Amino acid sequence: MVAPLSNNTLQNIPGTIALAGAGKMGGAMLTGWLAGGLDASRVVVIDPQPSTEISALATKGVRLNPKDADHVDTLVVAVKPQSFRDAGAALKSLVAPSTLVVSIMAGTTIAALEEVCGGAVVRAMPNTPASIGRGITVAVAASNVSAAQRATADALLRATGAVEWVDDEGLIDAVTAVSGSGPAYVFLLAEELARAGVEAGLPEELATKLARATVAGSGELLHRSDLPAATLRQNVTSPGGTTAAALEVLMATDGLRPLMIRAIAAATKRSKELAK
Image (cartoon, rainbow, N blue to C red; front, side, top):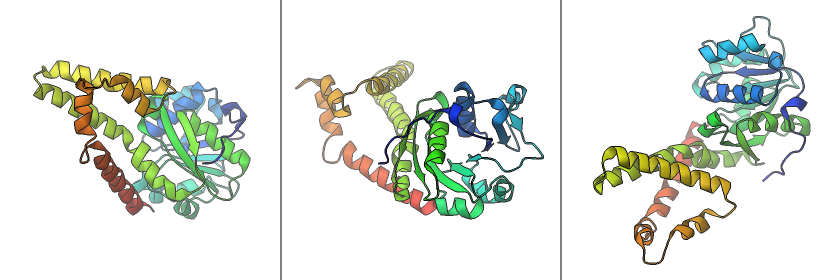
């Protein structure tokens, strides 16, 4: 792991920031930047079909699809990965050799970003809880990224949640499998917990409410507590009780652990296959 950064505040970021792609994740980042005090007049948004919410930000000073955009100090790339190369020429026109390029596109390598855009590249993998400011992002920097540029990237990414840095790009595939795709696994748990409740005799509406509240509340407890997940699990489990009976099934040799290992391995493999 790379040591955390200091002085990485939005107010310290120099120059103009361009955001390419203002969909759900890009829009969440922009909202976080403005809420954190970044001057809207320093932000350029490049998006051919901006939402009503993004268009409304023009009244606050954000420059939306300017025709005369020049080189920027920082470019954040949040377009769909399959659209990246088509958008490459327009993006490259914004990038000088000294421009920081921060990508949150899945499956797009530093090498591909350097080829298409140039600049000093940071590759990052966020996740969807970023939309409520509770995401976690893992980032890796190319060798030509300066300490000041890394601090800028950290501040921009931290506007939507926690940030961790690694120095090995090869870890990003596993990061994608664990935290990038991870929210879907948690939502599946809520689905299946509710379904199992129905099978046990609960009305569907009640089972759904119980499952949602239990998953959400347990996640918040995990967030607020300094205790390891294993300790929190043990705190709920009385010897010979109902929880112990269920955990005996979930923790069997063919239970959740080997299933999760296979799932993460499958997602990691697919991430490597999609890498450009």
